Length: 98
Ligand code: SF4
Image (cartoon, rainbow, N blue to C red; front, side, top):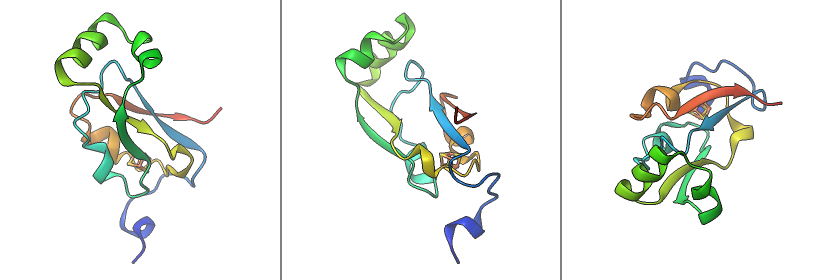
């Protein structure tokens, strides 16, 4: 059975993508294993990305480490919503590709 037949896919790939609030992400990685399409990867935030964070986001990053989730294969997203539910920080929402 393929991954796509095991979950409730809302869209074909390339219509919707996950948007990660890096100020909210604490790098807990729950989104990585839950995504059936391997959309996410973890890596340390760059200094340029760090500068874009809110004050609260900078403090969270300082406390929890610089590891963040990135939607490196966002074009594979099928909008199942599993990552949105899994994220304990509510840092992920789905948005349409523009
Ligand atoms: S909604 Fe989240 S878990 Fe589902 S396919 Fe898209 S990125 Fe992966």
